[in-house]
Image 1 (spheres, rainbow, N blue to C red):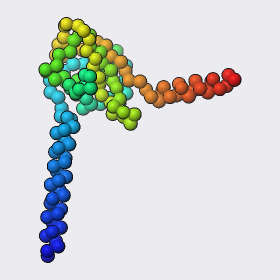
Image 2: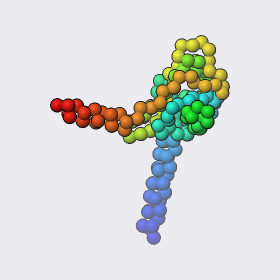
Image 3: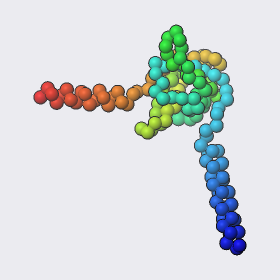
Image 4: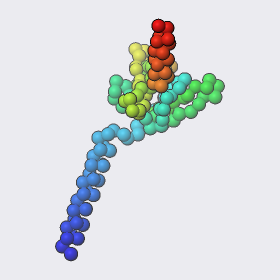
Length: 152
């Protein structure tokens, strides 16, 4: 009987420590949804960007992606983002989709311009750059190397 009580207490301690680490990692990871004003941006391709991904300025999270849709008139991907209401973006802000690492994970990087006029809530980021497709770049490199070899 003594052994089962010790095992039960030890199991409870392990569960408590695991719960503590779960709460600690959630609070320090800064994965909470940002609520604020909505801004859109149109891209020719979004390359795996999805709802919930971060919106960053200079590497600092200022918002999150809240929706992705297709503009039926221009056939561009429209990205809806929620921006922290404390942050005002100049009208000439540029948006580009970047990778967190080679293994994946995308985020939307905003590069503020120098305009004194700000993008209003519900406004649009005018300058965008679609992500580079790594597979296409590698394919071009490999085929360019093959054509160089055949010339000799």
